[in-house]
Amino acid sequence: MKYQIGDDIIVLHSNEEGKVEEIMNDKMVMINVRGVKFPAYMDQIDFPYFKRFTEKKIVEKKKEKVFVDNLPKEKPTPTKAKVADGVWLSFIPKFSLDEFNDEVVDLLKIHLINRTDKNYSFHYTQKFANENDFELHTDILSFHDFYLHDISFASVNDNASFHFDFSLMNPEKKKAPHFESSLKLKPKQVFQRIEEMKKNNEPTISYKLFDVYPDKMHDDKFELTGLAAKGYKVYEANKIRQNLEPARSVVDLHIEKLSDNWKQLSNFEILSQQLDEFEKWFHLAVAHRQASLIVIHGVGVGKLRDEIHDILKTRREVKTFINQYDPRFGYGATEIFFQY
Image 1 (spheres, rainbow, N blue to C red):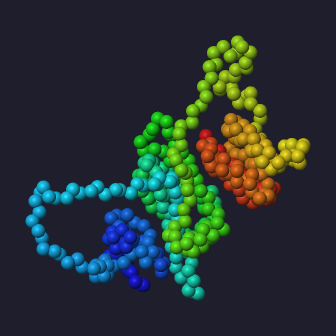
Image 2: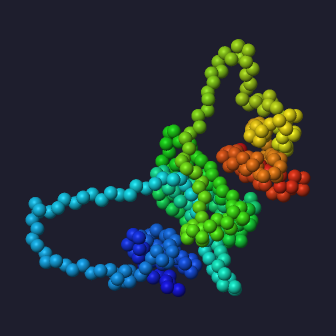
């Protein structure tokens, strides 16, 4: 192995000097440059003395006297603008060799990457099979990376999921007070991403959590004075649940249950009708403060399931949700757990 932990190195494309912090595999090392750790391929770094030895020596010319008036004006060097492209969750695989001398992944090093101009506070929870395994509450500055922790590669099979609740370190009037985002790793997709990463000589696999921190949602306000006198039915807020349609604990979204002429509908119309039905029973469950709700979406190609899961990731009332085998529905249902 060319490098060892503690070796002084130089990054070839930037001429910055640093040290080797960790040997990740036979092609990559973790380096520390001015207090920032990041992975690098071995062909992207070199020993400082090799570079100095191979550089052409500049022959010094005899110094001439230069008067202050004759000094050339220094031209400002343009600084490269930082590109804002969202907040990412990044996984760095650490490889080792098995008994057959094949590369295998031992663990995943997890980093939160903030490529926006905002500073965030965040609460992070990592779960296996819907059970909390790791929690952290801290801050991340704009255009900075933050190392979270490691997980074993084998644990990806245990329904690994990652949940964030972001808020601005410097609150803004027009911005949301907080923003939730989550990611669930699917083992097959992770294996494919790692193979693509190796093929393309990339150091990490990354998933975008969001592009831009969202604006505050504005609730429409209605003037209630005189509405009752005009014939509208007005309910007292503390008695609203008494006047709502009863909620359901299980909702079946199969289209044949929702429409008699479903065979005449396009796929888009079917999906829209199913999602409208889901929204109706979701909001009724929340209004009645149900603890949970089971949504039967079927298996199929997974389009309806994926649409529902994307919606649930954005709902503050959702504590968690899970799509696992159930003897009644197979894998065709998702159970939602609420928090109030």
